[in-house]
Image (cartoon, rainbow, N blue to C red; front, side):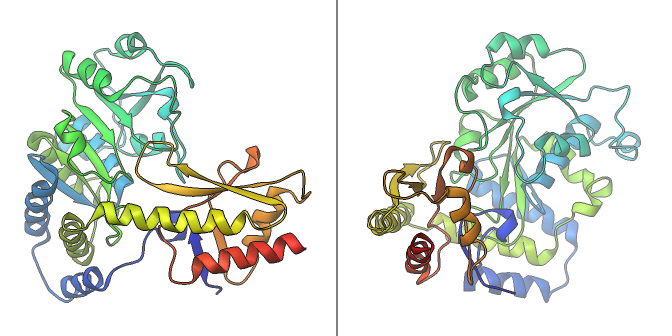
Length: 360
């Protein structure tokens, strides 16, 4: 198996993140102990909430599982007779409203996660414009929650903002959920008035494969109960929980401004060196969702070179080591390099490989 250089970001297809020695050791220590899992889940929820400001939290195997368990909890309200038949939720309130521009594919369709929990997705508005009344008029007696998706995958223009959607939900006495899987601020959305916020553990936190939902205690209790229902095949082990808790502790004490500076320095290096390669040009860009994440965007300089960007991406992924960058704008002639996951020497290897490819 070839080594992979991850210039794509903290993405599931490449294993998300690498573990620090401290997180890895916490996972090993957890895996070598016995514990009453329900007690550990409850204690972990208390600890996680200290980092989020939520009334309680439920640890999960990933952010997608957090969505499923949360939706199942809101539909069943912890009632066993309903839990036992999920994801069949016919005949009871089961609709989750989200903006059409937020109905994304992130490796799987987001709406699949809602359906797994028994939810019926209701997409409000159009893909490039949603008005507050689109959301208001979608609400009926079957609605159980409103969902906002905070992601670079989403359409960023023409959408209703978090505050407006929150106010609509609360005006109708409905829970307001935010999928914040890759977000880096674990207090922000609870402080903004969200009732439930779902996060990944393995992305910004660089934890073990894990996730959690944090928020109102009543709703969190509903979610926890799903481990006796649809959550059974999504359960997280004790080693995953302990790794997550250690990662949260480390993250709380991390100098995030310094991390951003390191990120920008790597982007600057990539841009400067790639701009020396005949036929290529590179610029610094910021994450589409507004996070303090910076990347190097590479394009073909058609005045000098005639190699297609698709060919360059294909050759990067065919070498040894394999080099994966973000190809979501490939159809627009753009390749994005996210330097955050790069190991020592990786950025130099990227430049060297691009030189080889352009020489042909």
